[in-house]
Each structure stands twice: as structure tokens, then as C-alpha cells.
Image (tube, rainbow, N blue to C red; front, side):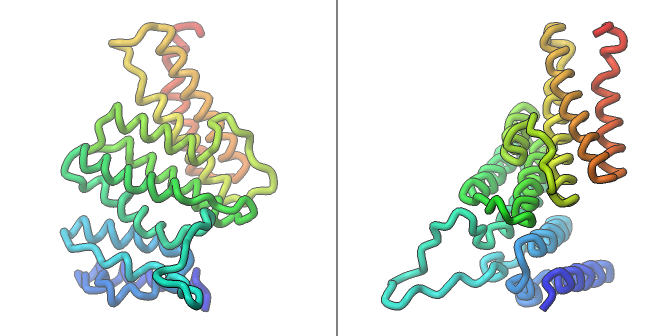
Length: 262
């Protein structure tokens, strides 16, 4: 059984069915393949499922049935087994993606904030192993995707910026952390995207009408620094999309410095 191949086939089948208006493909019974997939594959399919369900006002599938099976309790143990291992995601990437992809369709900022809190609580219980490249990549990706949604409506802009900054710090560890050595392109790409998120947060806090010159300059420099780091990751991974976004965002934020002489 090849999880990646199974995930690609499942996603292709979902997209083909949705294209011809057949939404039954999103029913729980038709998504049970997800139980056999790994977290990285499962979250991608779940993101697409939630997106289509929200766009078509279709009830979400029963996510509890789409997670990996919990281990059977030990002999003589009553109830479910203890799950104290923080490195075990326990299928929660499904619930995290449901929260992230549901945010754009939240009725107001308060509902969106509750979804963020749900995702943060689940991510806070998980600590990926330091030697598992795939899980380290997933860690950065989930925090980055969550943070990016925090900057979009219906989240309150100021509250969303605070959440997004927290997400970028969680994903990176430190906003000035150096590029990891011997890391995969996928991990580096998501770290670059996380730096871009951090740069967007600082840029979103700039308000020339209400802030003093020193405060404006400090926020711009902080934003520029993050977009520079994004571009460094783009070079390290030869990623055109990352380079284009980082460079254009850096230019837009730094442009006022040309007039100020700083």
C-alpha cells in the first residue's frame, strides 16, 4: 500500500466527482480510505473536502471516522489506552484542517476566533520528533496555514494579527532562526512561507495615520527582515513562487524608505 499514491488517486477522484456535481463523494462512507493514510496525506485531502463542503453548504463528514484507529487497550486495562506521547498527532490533523478551512466561512470574527483556538489547542498538544522530517514539515505547514487564515476576514484585523504572529513564532521557533542545515526542500519551503507570514503580520500593523515615525520605521524594518529571510529560503530551495512573493512584498514595504532616506 502506497499512501502517497492512494492520496493522489483519492484527491483526483474527489475533484473529478465534484466537477460533475456529484457531492456524494464527500460522504463519510466514501472517504474511509483516509484512515489508512498518513497525517501529511490526510490533511491535504481533508482541506479539499472541507473547502468543497463549505462552498456548497454541505454538512461535513464525520471526521471521527476518518482518523487512524486508536490502539487497542492493553490486557486488563479498562477504557481507551493512555495517549500521553506528545509526538503522536493522533489524527488531529483532520480536526485542525477542518478548523483552518472553516474560518473563511465563519459567520463573524468571534466564530473564526473560536476555530483558531480549537486548532491552537490541538497543535499545542503535539510535539513532532526532532528526527522526523515529514512531521517537522507538517508542524511548520499547519502553523503557517492557520496563521495565514488569521489575517483574513472575518477575523478582527488586530486580533488576527496577534494570532498570526503567534502562529509564525510557533512554526519557526524564533523569527530570526538560521536556515536549518541538511533539511529537505519541503521543510525549507514551508519555513520560508512562515517567514513571509511573519513579514505580513508586521506590515499589517503599519498605520501611518496613527503611528509616530520611529514606530513606522521599526515595523517596516521588522517586516523587511522577514521578507528577506523568505527570499533566502527561496534561493535555498530554488522556489520561484516563494521568491516572487517575498521580493514583491519586500519592495512594497521598503519603498517608503526611499523617500525618508533611512
